[in-house]
Image (cartoon, rainbow over all chains, first blue to last red; front, side, top):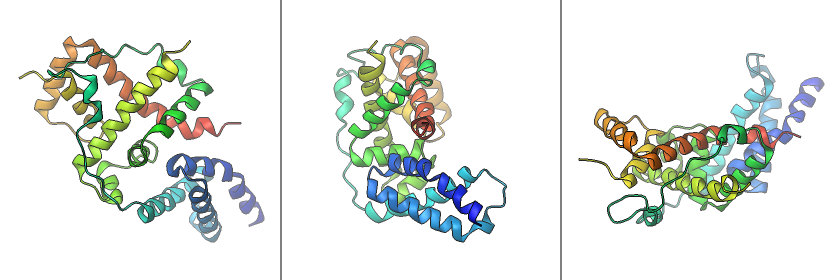
Length: 179
Length: 62
């Protein structure tokens, strides 16, 4: 038992990191991780060595994160005219065509790249970031995200679209444009 | 009817979140065959997915 406790505790920094990325609120992240560790220690028998400890804990944490999101997120802003329309002319063609990024695969090996990505994520509006992270970080399906955020699928696709447009622009400027 | 680049970016994004219909996929393919800008865009949003999935692991490394 003591051994299990210390192994669980050992995963705390990882879990905290994971929760912070999703919740963007240090206190909420801390709470979610705390609840996860308590649930894990109470349910040790549920961890049958099937999965790695980290995978098992992350699974519990995902549920705690979703609970948190459900508690704090109930407002549904209107899907307005898209801010990214400005990138296109009146016929819908690019005003400035996206240029290829230089060797993006190599960026995945660089710490600086992930710092830039995180910075770009921080600049997104709250709800846009949340839906994007639920999709790409937690790996939820669109209908689950709609349900949790109480929005329609169409609104959900608009949010995900905005997130990708903004992140693509931001990374082009902050990472791939430099060097 | 050809899709505009703006419509293509929306469909490409949705293609990461839902199954596109046959007609949508054909229209996308026709457009991408002749448009470098949208082809680059397509690769970049796919890359965003890959990078974001790796984010937690990368940033928690010592």
